[in-house]
Length: 300
Image 1 (cartoon, rainbow, N blue to C red):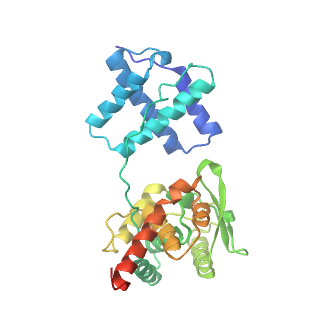
Image 2: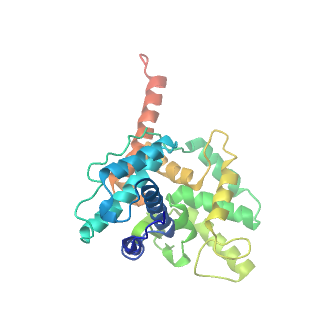
Image 3: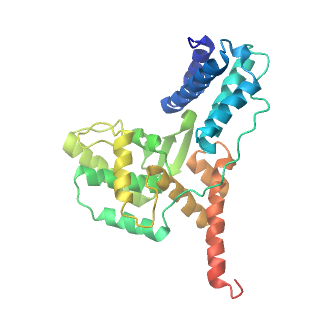
């Protein structure tokens, strides 16, 4: 049976790209989720119209995903994609009611984000300060240092341009999700490290301005290169199981919270749209308090 092609889907994708200004990776995720749904509905129910899609059809697809072993987190992401899609259709008068109205997302087990202990982070930074000055080492130092000092996302950091750094005010202007800007302060030591990197870049490649981080060939740094380089250096932290740039973002937030930072301030520094995403770091703070209590209280 030939699968239906819904022109409304492309209108939705254009809306995500040009109005919501979502990243290409996010847009592709939406496209994939919708394509998977339509393929299933067509094969199981012969669905040829968006108005034919009912709550029962959606529940059937979700049950199939669960039976195939998909995690609750992944299923919830797909549910979120569908909610946005059918809300778009409803708003534009394409459907009369949303089949997602009574769909309940599966509960997820709360998992604390992985982070580096403060003493391990200090040791890692110190070891990188004494590393050789080939471009792999320079980039490793810049990535680890800036991720930990700013809490930026991977795409935010590799897309950072030199003009976004204000050395006079010791701050960075970060362009986050949805093109939302936020300001992150820098200390003098970080500013000097960035200036030295710029000096080396101009000396070796004769380039200034535009993107801050470059590959050993002087080209704009790309995600896979940055990810693998961070993973390599984080492998030196023996107490860490997960090794990725996001671990350093978690570490940034956790260390701020553990040292008394205000939750709203951490939210702004991370670029979260709501406190709900930031509150996960309060759990790590509570874990630290519990550990201190057990070690210090005579009745613990």
